[in-house]
Image (cartoon, rainbow, N blue to C red; front, top):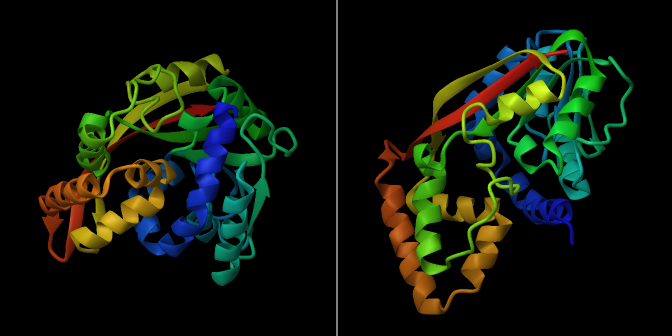
Length: 278
């Protein structure tokens, strides 16, 4: 199985569970969606492509911004995720958004079609980031903007590390090569910016977005959410002996409780927003 097939398989397994938690997940990363909307110049009436939309975000949020005069298309290679996104659009009675099964390196849209192209936490998993970004630029109108969001360093994102480091102690994995398709593939400032420039974008910029990831739930419910969000995590946990699993979960719940704020948990988050014009 190719790396891309593995990525699609993992997202396909998690998509129904993301649907279960859709409103909470939408709120977790809402500040990132709003930053992409702002940086890409999305306004009422815009035509927007969301690449690697998964179960439909931020395409569904963008559909609210562009209104009935606008057009939003969400593309993702995982057919199961696209089915979820279509159901979510139907439930919200959004008529100005549609979803297509497509990978970033082969977008089924004409040249110079969209006013803006965005991708939230998608480019890290592209089989060839430079080719995917070239395709995104191809379908973007001249002079318009593409904006991408990727995670900054793991050490700056306890939403990820406070669980990941505990799991690694109980279920260590071999070190991956620097360009492996992981959430932190482009955590180093300048790395994605240089690829966007190589792909042919102009006036490329990068900014650091600091925000709060707020989950209105207790530590136990947050544990269930994190397990539902990640197929690989579920596989690693399932392989553990019962006693090890119990101890791992105890340590994880203790770690989550250290981020308690009010009636939920709140984590500081850091994301890089990289934008460029065609």
